[in-house]
Structure formats: C-alpha cells, structure tokens
Length: 424
Ligand code: EPZ
Image 1 (cartoon, rainbow, N blue to C red):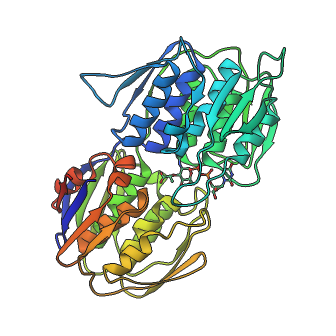
Image 2 (image 1 turned 180 degrees about the vertical axis):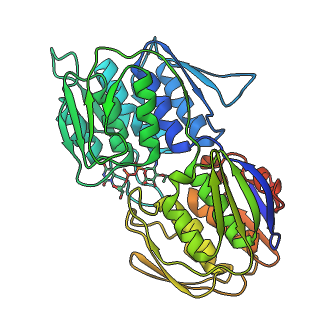
Image 3 (image 1 turned 30 degrees about the horizontal axis):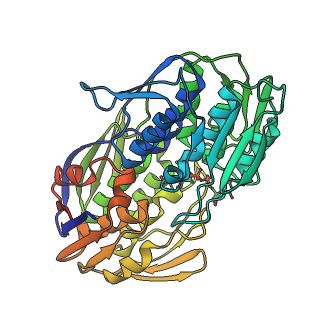
C-alpha cells in the first residue's frame, strides 16, 4: 500500500488547477445510460472512483473511452447494453454505484444492483432510493444482498410521482432526477438536495433533452419525455478539492491561487476561513487565499448544502487543531465521521469526542508521526496536519485519498510542499 511522506513546515505559494468534481462525474457517467446516443464528458477527474464507475458501466456493456489527446475527456455509448447489473465486487468498493439504479430502470425497465453495505463513515443505507423507485412504479425485492428491480408486467415506463424523502439525500435526489427524465408524466421531488453537483447533473440532462426545473432548490419538477439524445458536457469544478486546498494554505500560511475554483459553491467554508483570519478573493474562474500567522479556531456544524459541507469537516478540523483557541465541531450528517480524530491526536492535537461533537483546543504545534488514513476526507485532513507538523509525517493507506483526489501530492509539491509518494 502506497504511503505519503511529508516534511512539515513549508508555507505554500503558487497556482493549483482544480479538477472536475468527483461527485458530479459519478452521476454524470451513469446519466449516459439514459440514451442510445454517444455522450461526451469533459473535465472528468483521474480518480480511483471514476475508474471504478467506468469499470461498472463497461461491465454492463457501455462503450467508454478516454480521449488519447485529452485524458479528461470521456466518450460513452450505452446503445447496446448487455447486463443491467451492478455486482457486489464493484459496489462494495464504491457506494455511488447505486446511481445506476435509476437510469437502468428508466431506460431498460430492470436493474439488479448490489446493496452497498456500510463504509467507514456510516451504515449508508439506501432505503430512500428504494422508496423513491417504488413510488415511480418499480417493484423491488431485496434478496441475497441485491436490489432486484423490475417494472410490473405490461408497464413499459416508470410513472411520474411526488417523492418526499425522510431526509435530504444527494445520490437519492440524483437517482430520482435521472429516473424521472424518462418516466411517464410529471415527477416532483420535495426535500431535494441542493448540492452544486445536482445542478450540474440537471444541466447535463437538460442538454440531453430532459425537462427539469427547480434544480438547486428543495423542490425539483421533471416532465418525463420519450427519449433523450446525446450531448457534450463539462463536469463542474470540485468544490471539495478546492476547499481542501484552502484549508491547507490557511494552516501552513502562504499565497495560492486556485484556477477553476468556484467560490460561489463554497460560501459556508470561505466565510469560516475569513473569520479565522484568511484573506480570500475570488473572480471568474479563480479563488485566491492569502494567510499569514496563526488562524483563529472556528466552531461549525455540518448540514446539507448550502450549509457547511460534511465533506469539509475533517479538513477544517486539521486547521482548528493548530489554530488559536477552542472550537466545537458538530457532525450532523454521518454517524461515524470522526475517525481522523484519533490519528490527529497522535500528531499532538487536543480533541475530545462527545457524541456528535468534537471539542478542540488549538495547540502551538503538531509533531510528525506515522498515521493511518481511514476514509477519503480523513486522509486529506491527515495530509494537511502533516504539512504543518514538525518533522516527518507518514500517512499510510492512501488508497483512500486516491479515490477522490486527482494527483494531490503533485499539486501540493507544485506550490512548495515537501511531500512524496512512497510506493510499497
Ligand atoms: C453523497 O453521499 C456524497 N457522495 C458524499 O461524499 C457526501 O458526504 C454526502 O452525499 C453528503 O453530502 C457522492 O455524491 C458520490 P446522502 P450520499 O444520501 O448520497 C442517510 C465524499 O467524501 N441516508 O446525502 O451517499 C445517510 O446515511 C463522499 O465525496 C439514508 O438513511 O449521502 C446519511 O446519514 C462521502 N437512507 C444522510 O442520509 C438513504 O437511502 C445523507 O446521505 C440515503 C441516505
């Protein structure tokens, strides 16, 4: 297993190119299942999760090719699907595989998708996905660890429905959105997720001929159409990658420009970083952060978009760990998303977990040590901590990091970090 060796203490300066968003690319790769025409996706990030999704849809019979000239461009064609299945071997490594359910049911009237099983940050059930598909007329039985979904005999298409989920679910909203584009009649999604990746998916579906309004709000209306056609779509920039780099610079000090970063997708995080003492300016297609001296620790609670994103919780805690003063971090979305805390304590952080709340006391310095990544964003937080810790930090199990960050160590080296990958 690869590791990252980091020598802390360098401030960061220069320019970083933000890649396409993992959490937009994954549903948008599945959206190609909705048409027999070719679909071209640009700005697709080079991530392990994207490779897994490409493997999953190729497994179904989708043709998917990365352009030789521009590797971030992927052309897909789902004209000749052979098996509408998402097998356990692939789904167990990536929960987002559940995003195949809606498109397969909408276009082919059947889908066999493995239950994802839990993951490090929580049980991650898919009961809402099942509830929404049943509301649209699908018959779903769960057996042998699989969701086996069919349309009733004689029913050719899903039926539009009004779907209100028990909680806001990002991939649930994306599944319903994709399924509804080909359903008969109107679908209303109440309590819909508002993350920017939902809006980006909706924009892609509209280019394919879908009739959608209200995306980006809690209420989305979709009028089903008979079929969708191909399109070319550019994946929106990754707000969590951008937020991760902003936290890194705030922690180490420096002056960095994030090219392609979308400040309008990071309001809650940028507000907190400004309160901490960072100077952040933004314009069309860039975010600049300048930070010097010790930041002031900030308390926050994670909530659904546009609130503070749960995917930025661990990274901001790394900043709080060495900032001035006390802070309280409340995780309201997932039940087990503090696994980075024990590793940060090994680096010298002062953190107490009390249920959903991490109570922190900023320390002057962290000291490098060997730490273990447990999940994607926890890995990123340990890299940030290593960048500021005194001496060497070795982050183990960075396959977690490779799932969601495109060449992180190369991008960090490019702005002055002393970091290298140690291949096992
Ligand atoms: C998406 O996961 C993201 N993944 C996650 O990013 C992100 O943390 C999460 O949304 C919240 O923003 C992708 O988009 C691929 P949810 P998702 O359904 O859709 C509960 C990362 O680091 N729930 O919005 O799986 C669930 O347990 C990843 O990039 C049910 O109970 O999350 C959680 O407590 C991690 N039943 C809450 O809802 C369901 O059927 C929100 O989950 C669905 C969800």
